[in-house]
Length: 335
Image 1 (cartoon, rainbow, N blue to C red):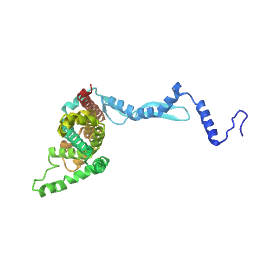
Image 2: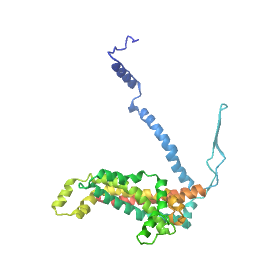
Image 3: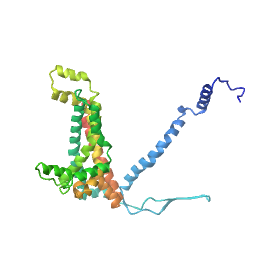
Image 4: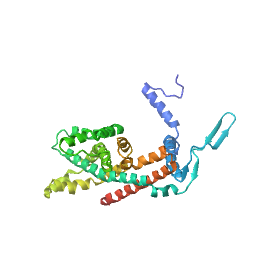
């Protein structure tokens, strides 16, 4: 029943609108900052618990030697109605910079770093080069069924990591498909899993197959933003296809190529699933182990959490330096 001060409405829509305006007027003003911080509170809490705390605790842990789970009580609250006891996360022994100094004499860490850099130097330029050529080819107006080709080439990125790594493992066996084709055409089989070089090349091939289409799509999007007038001006100056690619396409794609190189570098340093599965095929551990795989082995198999934390921060430092160098070198043309 409507009160004396309530307005009369001809339909339910006007009544609902009046009710929403009344609720909005009763809410605290966003200008006060309270509502904004309340909306941000869940995101801040999740970021603190799942990102900020692990980041800083890993740095803290890198200066200690892990000696097992702790049982000491850090905080004990007893109100009579309930009691709460917070136990220490672990028993730690302070070792200072010993974990970082130990890397200089760690031969397996040096091998893991070498393997990762080898894969980076071979795989990233190869993948980006193939992706660029495919993007240029599929951007040509005379190519038919471009949508079909783009979809087919981009499909590998949706493949499950373990599944596609296992497929490559089976293909590269001594009696696998690749060696069968090589022997059929009169070539010698390749020792994919008994040679350190070819074991690393197997990982290069697997990662290149999976990510080339993904980077092709990114480069193709950049190509479609290149002004057509630049190509027309180059044609008037007598430039051929190669010259237009060198002097028009590549300079215009420089920011996109920089993005692809930086993200591919970071992704290569994070390789884990592929080397683990390739190693299960019989490849020697030292020839395929990557930094992330070595960190996993150190932390969760050897339970040297302090040393693994130090390795993690060294990895972050290496990736940050390489990314900064790529941004500096690749960004000179934008100045």
